[in-house]
Length: 268
Figure 1: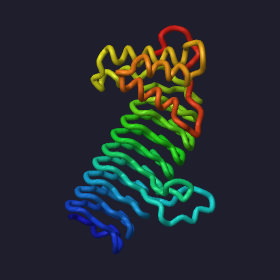
Figure 2: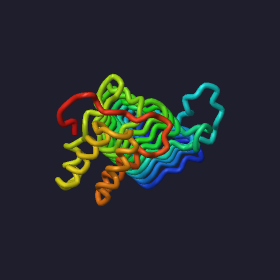
Figure 3: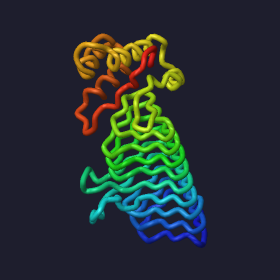
Figure 4: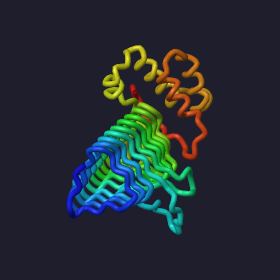
């Protein structure tokens, strides 16, 4: 363990093996740092915060701060950060609030670039990538492997499904289905994230089934989006990725569904 002479580690903090705490860091009394966590310098960690093993946190990051809610008086909110995450300069993540389950959860191996923010009560999956200055409003739910372009933002209570890609400067004010691409001032679906699907090693038949599902759900006729999602799930019953998309659409959600752009041609 290596703690710089200018760092402040308060009594009660729990430090794992091989932790490195650089100059001018502050670690609060209810913080737990897993094995091998590195705080480069000028990092502030407070509240009931647990940082998983092997995480690296860069200068200016502020983790475990109170929920950004007017009149907030909740002192038992928690922040859980999974193993192997990289949090670059000025990243901020808040604890959970009494308006939800009281915990903000960030999965493993996430890469959070400079200035990105995770609000109170968010649930963020594994292997996500947040480019510079991405902001999540409170209670957002982000699936595994989601990629956000720089300066994009997610409204409170929105969901972004597994494997989706959100373009830079995009405002997400509705739920984005798994494996989709979303772009625009107010996000619209621009098809499936085909490059991401190929990188996942999905077969051509699976990708074709997903493309067919996208077209039928968002550009089909007869019934509504939910009806067409049920039909696609039944038609491609052996394709779990189609089931993921359909189940996402059919889930009881607090926000409306982000829809596809109105255009001709092959949108998936």
